[in-house]
Structures are given as C-alpha cells and as structure tokens.
Image (cartoon, rainbow, N blue to C red; front, side):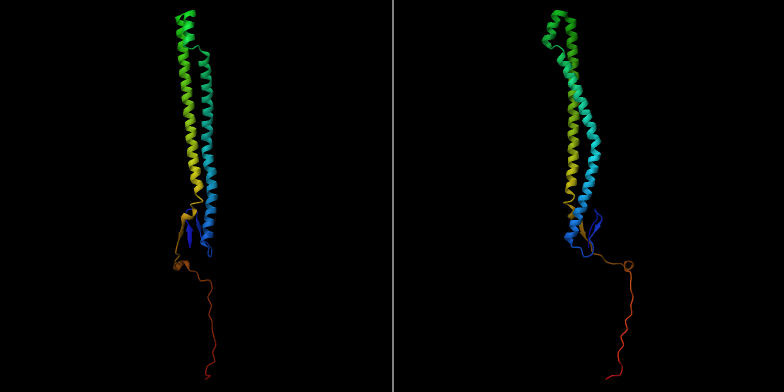
Length: 171
C-alpha cells in the first residue's frame, strides 16, 4: 500500500500505483493553487504600499526638479550678483543648494522605494515558482508501506459452521 504523508492520501485497495500518483499530482495542484492565492494575498498590501510610496517619492522628485529648474544657475547667480548685489546672489546660491539637496533626497527615496518593490516582486516570484513545482514533485512523496494487521485490527464479521453427512456402514 502506498501513502503520501504530506497530502494525507492513501492508495485505495486495487488502485494502480500510476493512478494513485496521478491523484497525488491533482491534489498537489489544488493545494498549490490555494497556496498561490494566499501568497498573492499576503504580498498584495505590501506591494500596494510600496507603489504609493514610489508615487509620492516621484511627485516630490518632480516638485524638487521644478524648483531647481526655476532657480538661476551659477551664471545667473553671478549676473544677479552684479545687478542686485552680493547678498542677493548668495541667497540665490543657498536656495539652489537647498533645492539641489532636496532633489537628491527625493531621488534617493524614489530609488530606494523602487528597489524595495523590485525585491518584493522577486521574493513573491520565488515563492510562486516553488509552488509551481509542487505538483511535479508530488510523486516523490509517495511511500510504500507494508501493512501488518494487529490483533486489535482484525474484526470477525461472520462465523459459520458447515456439516456434511456421510453414509456409514456401506462397503
């Protein structure tokens, strides 16, 4: 008799081993489909949160990029210094430095969130790939057991007494 402990299946009496292996593969496929939905459900909230984080980081990056573009460059700050004075040029340079630092922070946050999302997708793909192999490996878990009945396992269902009459004395 063959059994599959992981799936909790046992070979039926008279069932060929090939049919039992096919039944194990079908049960493993059903189990893998259910676990696939669980994996997708487990990863979905984290993927959604990272998607929102990426969108917010991209919006901050775009805003910081627009601020940097609106400020005068080094040449513009020098010309502003000539026209409006050194103090105005220094303030413009400081604003540009702050805006550039803000742009770099936004870029780093965006890149970090994007990398985290890629890592999360890779982890999900690895788990799903392992689940896809489950039905193919179902036959590996089949064990052949020799059943030896114990005294307590034997049940007498019917008792009968047969009697046959013979003719005595005929020779």
